[in-house]
Image (cartoon, rainbow, N blue to C red; front, side, top):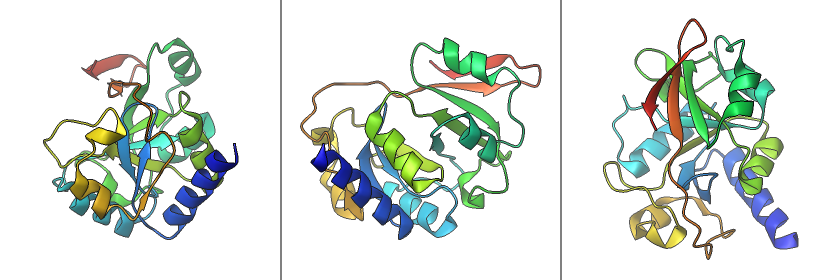
Length: 191
């Protein structure tokens, strides 16, 4: 437990310094930074070699943090979260609190309540901000399901590499992505 908490503290310290971390998420290995810091988001995009117009997902700890980053919270959000069978990212209009370079061209952002991973959840709680989450790969390459699939260039380029779960061989798929429609319905973008 001590090692786990040390890794949480180290990741949060790096995020508070506006750095990019390489970390295990509730789905695949990811690159992350504070979702409210444009400079950190830019650094993450450069490392990933991702076009600036492609938005990233933001992980949040709970419904309250979801509401912080959504321009309008779906009225049925509690039911949506309770009914999801796997990690699900909800595309909504983003709020002004997010780094502007994180939003898609239409002003949307993908938000996911990180419930399935204790490490990510603890980091979010301690940080108190949303955490950018994008797969830890060069743009266009396969997402790394386990740490040993992360390319050396990504490992070298991250400011902090989380040691927690590096030896875990459990494979998870990327999240399901749905757009929340004005009537509260969902449009599946990735299943």
